[in-house]
Image (cartoon, rainbow, N blue to C red):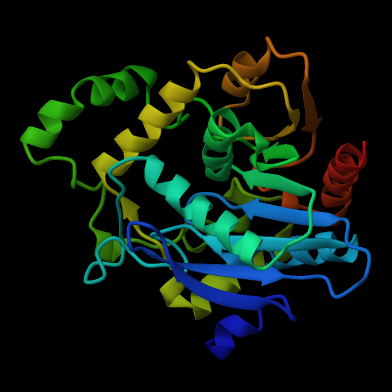
Length: 312
């Protein structure tokens, strides 16, 4: 691993590159507790355009509590394979089902490595959409499900009527060859933390954490993801729409919402889950979108809620 990146990766882990059933190479990281008593395993599903090193401090907290941790770079991001290697700054999927193949590989590796049960899923943002699909299709995959700042509703920055229109006319857009269009030229893409001043950012209120993100991205250009195609956007919108029409199985579920959220749609999340009395919902009032890379007091509040839920 490049030394510029290695210094941000949590120590004593194992990094593995594996191919999915459809041939995409993924980067997966595992931290396995070397103790007689292990509390279980955390499957951490990160969000859009993210990478393993971003949550090193969070993983350390789970390991300290006695959990194994397994996580990944989703296809197209981090050091996992890009859809178009000659154009690495273009994000594209044909269907959100592709991410389930990535999750299949994560689970398969966890079984091979004999990672201790119980298995708990902890997901953030877009990772919550992927995790929710697994919850509704194979609820027994994990013992408990924890979702932070879920992307389960509208994209606040895209008008709802436009979202409905692009879904409705997907076939026509495909026939016209427009699904590969991007909002900006891929070569001009820069990761969000490198385009905004700390005071205006919508991720975290912790200046130290924001600076850490900037430093990682400034020194590791290979982690820069890219711009999504119109086809990518439609695939995610269709998955949101589909999952808003299915029933949640009665499982142990915790949803953490950021009180200062400006990226995902808290109201849409609450509308989706309001009919399920078995879902625990906690709002972390002072948190922005990135609850787990917030100020230490905010992180402690969130981690306390998570561990109390896991232990219950």
